[in-house]
Image (cartoon, rainbow, N blue to C red; front, side):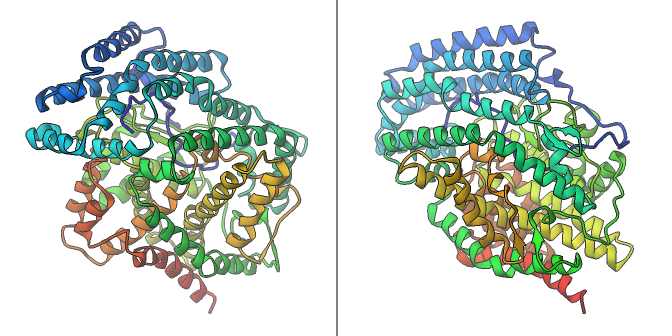
Length: 611
């Protein structure tokens, strides 16, 4: 909640990848020298040494004395803590980004593990901080906030920390859990990452990595799609025991932690970290599930008709439409369309995005051992974010570029809040990314040269929105079932497979047939492993942005200024406070219907094209 950032860069989007050697232009690579020049850079050694000494000194100065600090002294302590967070974040950002460029390189894996271990040892001294802070009685806490306005600026992050007050353990147990973390969940996370990166899939006599194989699922040739799906299922089945072990262990680990903390549900820890009320998430979940027939069921029935199929196989879900061409989008063209879309909304958006292209802030090419998908990692507030892509040159990859640049713009704007207040809860982290996607989509749609091209683009957007909203809520339901079942005992691979299939037909609809082997496709999804219950944040963010975009389309006066202020706020405001200037309230069940109606409207347009 309020601790040095020693974790991995968050994977914010699971886009497909692998360019298959096609000429897509001069794809940029990261220049990590803004963090450190190299793994043996003297500045890195200096920062590691400083961190160890400063954490020990911090504990010597404040442990056991928190209740005696004046407001001015508390502010000085918070400022020192923030500097520790900054240096720890810089070290782990450098180690993590190097690792994700080549996860199968033993040297990079060792370097990241060594950094993680060194930081865990150093920050053990800081475990007391949140525990003692939460033991301050409420009157004393309020008095501190009232006595110093500079200290009160940190209240949002302190309030989030104090939300954990009912669930914290003894100092000794908290320190044990901190020390044990590197060989606990973090170790299983790493095993999962290395296993996924090292998998090979045989397709027509050729061995492919996971990104190239997943990419086959969106090929025009149906036989290639089927070959990709069957190759995925075979390899997953061969390793399903390992994946089941990872999920069993992590779910049990979480259950033990939650039980000791007396958290009321497996999801509660995520809700607390997201600063969102359980009933708001439940309203979102129910609204989406109720809309399955109006969204995914209706759309996929249309898609089956376009493809001349009575029933669709799972490998048809992300297939291009028959009238869709397979033209690849050159990197320069992708950069141009996203930059123009951002500039049309507000020139400041394009200006904030420009250094990503020019200064080595994007790593775009598909490379051996590179982590799958895409993400934007904020690093620390005195450097800048970095974006990772696996750029294919497909129209959806242009959307992914727009998405990740939205994160980058958001992170740059929020950096002004400082290290402790800049980070947004996951539920709000998708705000600028999904908005950037929508701007880019509207730009590309306006350039459509025919009804067929417009239809293809609308269908692609609907599919992306279904993947972001419907699929992620189905994933959330799967996780809820998985953790509930694991609390009753060990789960076999067949048990987990059955839970996975229980949400698939419900969410995708009756037009689908599910091949033998599809029941294992839960195995490769990283969010279940790294960030339990993370997935609902995608649906939350998409619904929020759809409602926000509707306000923008209605011509809300001063929208751009209010939008920039919202992004600049970072994690300093609750979602109610952020949305109030736009006349929106996520705690109102009707709010989610407003967002879902945008997806329905696109499907209405597609149905009208059939007449």
